Length: 138
Image 1: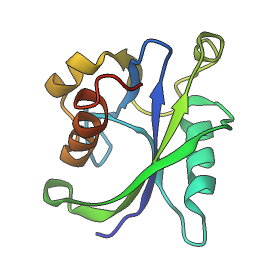
Image 2: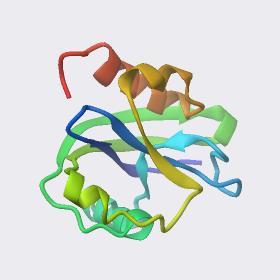
Image 3: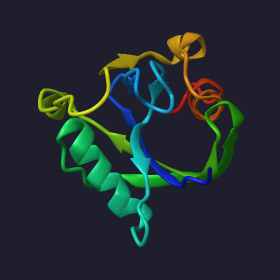
């Protein structure tokens, strides 16, 4: 199944990554993922991102940037397509306003913890390439 998605890499001042744990009914049950989701027909990637973030954590985001667009293929989920990956730096004040609207919860992870998380392969590869291999960057 071809599915294009908009995804948000959220980092805090300490360089930790905020991830969402999907619930047991999701296409990726009980795994850690970026916030975001499917791009609807006639929707632009940034519009999908803003809609999904509002649904999932109740935040209206601005000042985010597109990091990369990747082609992914996840045979175990019968899913392939384009993943637009945006980045957003969250401050301590905004963290207090996050409300879990979807999924099984969320948590911050240090770069060193990412390799041990159960997550879709393309997500793990992206994070390892962009966070762990580039340790000097946030």
